[in-house]
Length: 441
Ligand code: C2E
Ligand code: CA
Ligand code: CA
View 1: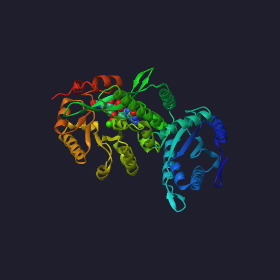
View 2: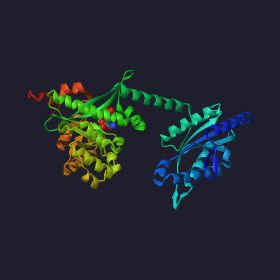
View 3: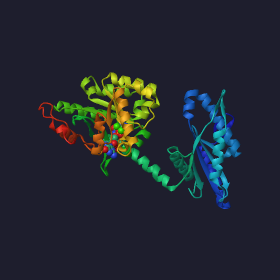
């Protein structure tokens, strides 16, 4: 039994015993049993900011509310710190469970919970499983409600009914997580490099490092398929560190081999920028090599910088103080405050591909790109256009005085060895002809 305030709630074991009894009764009466799991939202932040006593008081009030709503303490359990379980026995097959949950949810959302003098509205995510459809016994029913809850938490839905596809989704996600963990240990991640070209000289002026997973079973996996999982599981910290170290190592090796190296841009996940250790990690990665710092640039998405502007400015300053460059990635997709943009310690602005695509479609599209370029130049920032695929786009960008472009027109991202042999000339030989290929008038 858990005792929160004056209310004693069942734990998971006792709750499952009770659900088993309800299932037995439902078999003889032909009724359904509804198992509903509840995960309070924002509870951790309330606990962290107001303290454990306030957190406990809130849980007590939630428990009281649930007892009041169900009319029977025995139908409830506390199954985790901020997780509750509810069983509704003997629901007639024609009963509208969704409507019942919708109204309950709405009432809960509207209920003013009080802590000290403050009023809180609490939301929750829910997962539902029904006997007999979703499981023949209490354990299975509970597990399936958990799967539904997990998917609901990752979606915009308040609650979800269990479906069989959910088990497959949850287990494939679990196995992907394990595979990615192993991929890191086994060295299956690789960096590909995509050149950035100076629009006036036609020379390669930099490159972006883009991660891929070399899955031995299926081949090269693009980052869109695994970065979200890395971020959800926190693995992004280790994989991001790996990408940073690998890019610096590649850069140093090329330099040592006498190649005319260019600045390498590494993508930084929001979670990395938010982490306390991130600055120290960069310091460690570049060591005392000022040239390595000058050869490194970090690409950070616009919306991430703007989300916590004070923290961002402090972090970006520290990074720049080391000589590392900073680019705002996907510019135009976030909601930049122009007054902040002027204050940001950054060097480069990358125009998102969607603007480049629209540029040749409508006069407004062209005006937008032109405005972004002028704005960047007024703020003394370099501008790189992303996702340039056609000669027309490249021509217009040059007319608009865009500094650099990156895109399939010039080159797709390629493995490091190909990037080096194709785009990095030997600095000793003085023959730079290999770097100004591909651009047409
Ligand atoms: P991004 O930073 O916006 O990278 C540009 C993406 O556009 C890359 O996709 C690139 O291959 C693609 N691209 C380049 N030129 C063109 C073009 O002309 N047309 C089209 N349609 N696409 C073009 P990719 O490699 O699949 O990477 C996707 C995203 O994954 C990146 O978007 C970035 O946000 C993320 N990412 C890649 N590597 C890393 C990494 O090491 N760490 C982190 N945190 N994220 C990474
Ligand atoms: Ca990028
Ligand atoms: Ca981008």
